[in-house]
Image (cartoon, rainbow, N blue to C red; front, side):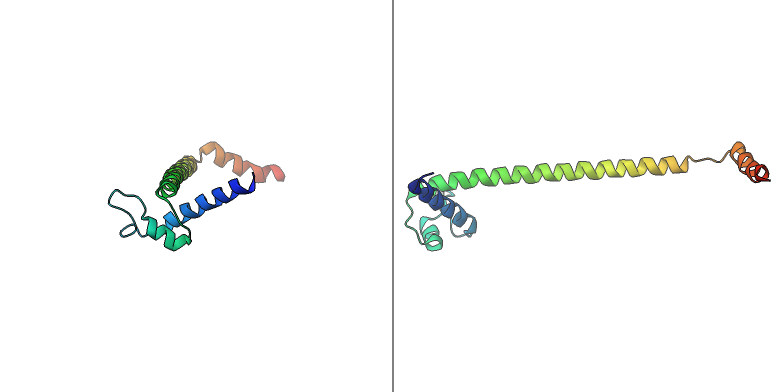
Length: 116
């Protein structure tokens, strides 16, 4: 990556980060876009509408990807918890089905006699 490309990428990333710092109630236009003045105040950069729009589109894509990743992680955690719960329930059921039979008692009674 050449220097100019790196600078442009850094500039865009700076604007994206600034968008995340905006106050949702006062730093967005009526159409829902970030206010350029607010972005310039945060970054110290001169920002065009095209710069803002490009960064905002990328910000929205990142937000959507993050929300999807969080939802997947939550679903995996719930599935794991359900699996553990099911496993625990199964183990409890197995323990409660450990019935001592007459044969078991007789075997235990014979063992001490066999040692003599």
